[in-house]
Image: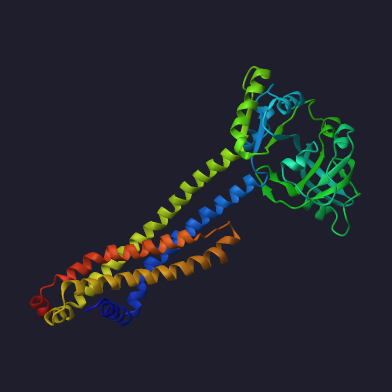
Length: 402
């Protein structure tokens, strides 16, 4: 008997008991769907986090006062480390002494209330220099960026985020219009293209003002910078740039009262953490596959018992052990393989039609191949014992079986 005959016999046996075969596959279907969906959730979360980290610019460094980064820990760095500060003199020293090409953007932030007419919204005020737009990869949908003269002359010109523009100016171009920020009047000179969420928050709800206006009109502390973004023109130079900045500030401050967050290192760290998280989720789903595999083994053992006389007749007519073994292995593999395919289709439907409405999901080809391959391996592994039991039946004893 060749493989084709074994395949036909296995298919015939599966179709002869459709309901039992489906219930047997159900464990594999649920297991495969669990593995793929959980991996898709882990991978989707990973891609979403990495997109937020990289959304503020590739190869950026973030310098904040205090030994703990305010980006990761939240809150105001100055309140956690009284006396720790970064000044414009520090910024100038970094620009002058770092030997690698960089672009430096000092900035301060605060919550603000934005109003036009009867429409009021809460947003974030970013007090920055003209380099802020280049460093953070901000493009304009209209108007112009802030100019060096806006910073030096403390003009009340601002660039607004996309959501601010659509909320306050639904039917008219914002360019040249006036808005009120914390009760003070400012002129809109530019509107940024929508960027959405990033490591630094939602830039669409921000208003970018000249750095010098913060101290003059918003009561910010004199000559204190809450966060400085440093763009490495060549991201591969980031480690050396961090080392140089650290040396410059240690010599000036005579202590380490600042922190530098390397976006490249942060991306690598989050990738490693999320890979571990995704693997953990896949392992949880794999438990369901093992349970499904045990179900296949149980049903195959029942099938061997039910077909004992048939096996005895086949062996009496000349069928060899390998023929019986291959038929039962093919049967268990078909059950698990078919369950795997149905599980893949089900998981894709559930992931993109239901789960994606709540959290990001991303199904990779490798996760599908891994899940289906694992399901077939489970079928073979748990089918070996029943197949060997069937193949080793003594024909005379099998024929006597009632």
